[in-house]
Length: 132
Image 1 (spheres, rainbow, N blue to C red):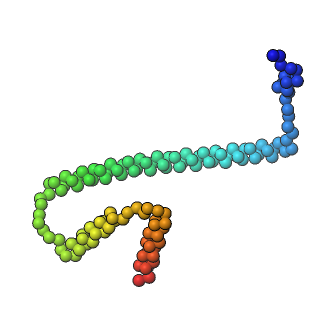
Image 2: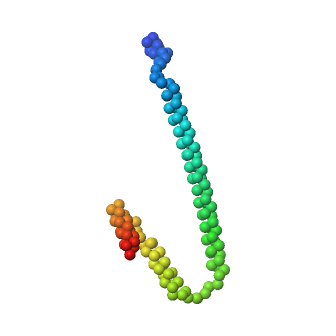
Image 3: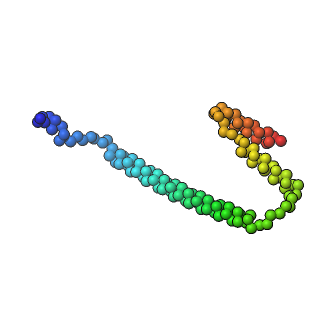
C-alpha cells in the first residue's frame, strides 16, 4: 500500500514551542544539573566509606580469628591446674554463666503482639532500675 500524502506530511513537519523566558529556564536546568552533580559526589563519598567499612570489618574478622587461634594454642600449652577461684570471682563467673544461659533461653516471639509485650516489659524493667 502507498502512504497517503497527509500522513507523510505529518512526519516531515517540525513543531516549535515558544519559551517565555529562555534564560530563566536555562538557569533552572543548570541548577538542577549542579544539584545532580553534588548528589553524585555525595554518593561516591558514601560508596567509598561503605567500601572502607567492609575492608575494616574483614580486617577485624581476621584479627579476631588470629586471636582465637592464639588463645587455643595458649590453652593447649598452659598446664592444667586445680586451683579454686576466690569466692568473689567464683560468684561473678556463676552470674555470667546464668546470664548466658538465660540469654540462650530467650526465644523469638511468635507474633508481633508478643514481641511488643516483651519490649514493653524490658522498658518497664529499665524504668524500675532508674527509679531505685
